[in-house]
Length: 103
Image (tube, rainbow, N blue to C red):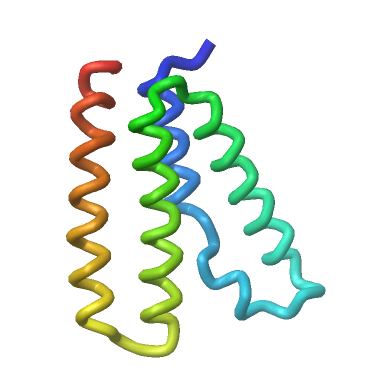
């Protein structure tokens, strides 16, 4: 049985390894399927976490990462980067204290 800390660690790992640029690949490329599988694994794993505050923070971090990647996909965007870093810090502050206690 995985602990909440293990689930959080795995969810953050999936998020960091997700292919955010899969949409740039040809649809015959396995990138689409791999990215979809990665996203589903994240969603299913996060759904098993009982703490709704952590669940919301992890989902919001996924959405913030998606928005940041798409805002900077074709070039730098300092405003989007600053917004993402602030949002990421805010969400990790929600995740990490609970994560440290749960570990």
